[in-house]
Structures are given as C-alpha cells and as structure tokens.
Length: 275
Image (tube, rainbow, N blue to C red; front, side, top):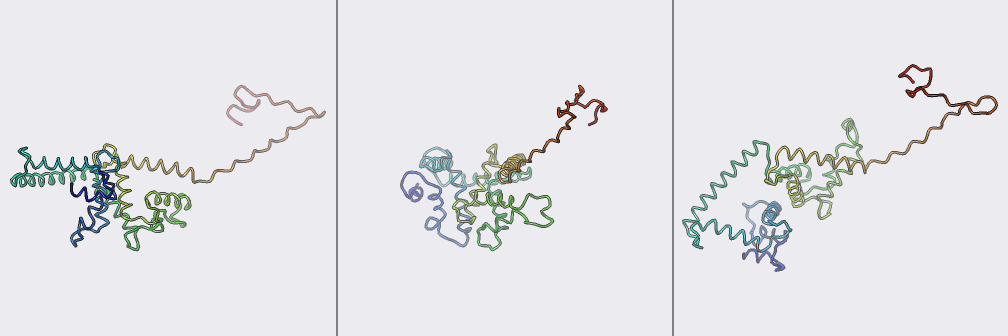
C-alpha cells in the first residue's frame, strides 16, 4: 500500500489511469537495459489498470487495491495463522509456477480452437500499426493511416467505393483512435483502442475472442459502415415528371372518351398478358 500512497498524487484515496501508469516509470521503476521500451510498459500498465478496476468506474480505489493485497497474503498464509513463513513462500511459488504452466497450456489449447487472448490481440494490432509506420518513429500519422483507404484510381479500384468516400471512412476511424487530437497515433492510443475493441468483441466475457465473436464483430462493423456510407453519399436529385402526351381532340372540340378497360387491366382488343 506504500506504492498506492506514492502513486496517489492528489491524495483522494483512488488512482486514475494516469496516476497508475507511473508505477512503470522512474523512480518507481528505474530504467534498465532488460526492460521493454517505456511506451510498451505504459501500455501494459493500462491493461493491468483495467484488471484492477473491478467495479469499472475508471478508478482503482484503495479498497480494490487492498483486496488484491489481502487475497495475495491469504494465498501465502496456507495455515491461516496470519503469518507467512519461508516454507509457505516456497510452496506458493511452486503452486504459482504450476498455475502458470496450466494457464499456458489452456491458452495454447484455446489458440488451437481459433481463440485469442487480450495480449495476443494487442500484439496483433501493434504489428499492424508498425506496418503502417513507414518512417519508424513509433507513431502513425494521418497520411500513413490513409494508406488503408486504398488506391485513388487505376484498375484496382474497379469494385471499390469512390475514393472520396473511402478516404472519409478511413479518417473517421483515425479520429476515433486519436484521443489527444494531435494528428498522430501513438502506442498508448493504439493500445487503448485495441483494449476497447477486445472488450466489445468479448461477448461472453471469458477473456478470449473466438471465431463466432470475430464474425459477429465483423458483421456489426459492416452494418455500421453501410449506415455511415448512406450519410456520405450525395443525395440523388429527383427526376423531373414526364409530360403526359396530349389527348387527341375529335371534331367539334369535345375531348375523346377514355378507352374502356378490360377486367384484367388491359386495353380491349389486346391479347391477355401483352401491353
């Protein structure tokens, strides 16, 4: 809880995500050549924040942090004497290693079934972002992101929407990810967006995404894009009414009587089924 006190900058008894990610930054986490880059550590801390925020109110409150501490202590205090001894520590470490091995086996079994974990999903999104990051500055600019709209002209555009509409759709997605509106997508924003997508796609909340959940997410995204396209396409101009042909006037200036219609709706004298 000393770490909680150090992180709680405004001393309100709860941590925001910005306060929480300080746990991976100096001085609480001194830089080391063996550590991942700072932006990756921050991204992982944001994911951990979501795990600790059990009531999903956007804060890690002291009670939530203490619950983790009590749970951890109780795991070590196997004989329930309110003390943790060295043999208990060794036993718990062995059990922890066994649980980690079982979790890896479960994750591998899930992968064989076409399922994906949160970390795998985030890693996949990061790899796609790295492919867009042509100048390798760890950020994706709007111009780099616009590549996803496809070519503006040429034979490749034969079955595609007009480029202007594809461009608008792509830039709307860019704006949705660009939380701080600096016209750049950094790894924090990309990770936060990947987390948001994963939580939306994980319909049964088992922390895995299966093929059915992927399919439903694609269907929902397709419907969303179609509805958006309707608002982007120019409205069709109404067609002018066609003038009716003038009716022939008989001698004497009286209008000609209307032809009588047969019961089937056809003019008299025409074979049934013809016009």
